[in-house]
Length: 210
Image 1 (spheres, helix red, strand yellow):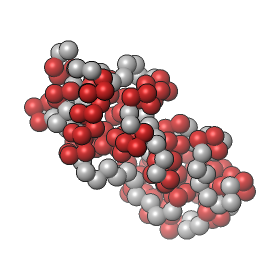
Image 2: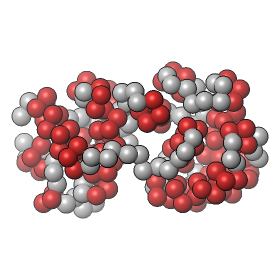
Image 3: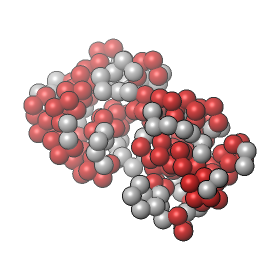
Image 4: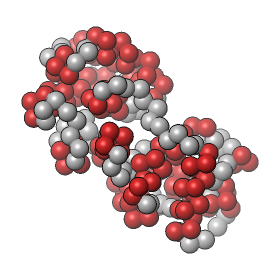
């Protein structure tokens, strides 16, 4: 099967299975999404969504986060793991938004990568979800499943992202990645994939043995 045909089929199948391609993280303000994505590193979205309501209630504005005591933020995010680094990054990031970006999450990759705790995966998610820009979010689900589908090779996030930019329709890229996360959780589990009910089975090289 040609790559373009495979991509077209995968995109269509994911759209049918997951029409609502939404980020699982809960937020109301742009910087809240930035904070939630930082907390989600090495942690589940479910866990992040459990702790952020209290966090956002305690620090209801960007200025509150920028002026926060890192130790107090640590107490709120402790259960997300790596809480020392995450709390520090959250405070420093909010300070940068306040002092350099007019209190808004910026809308360019270059500007986002200057923010403490923001790498390419986070930056892509912010660009896609906040600004509707083409975005390729290479998390573990994306890397694992696109490898199985034969769309990408390797586990390096940067290289997988580069490969996907070359083959995905730009207007589909952000939703495509969200749908892969949903599919990875619902069907293509890393330990026990449910291949018998997988909508992507016809396009999966691991399943078909191509």
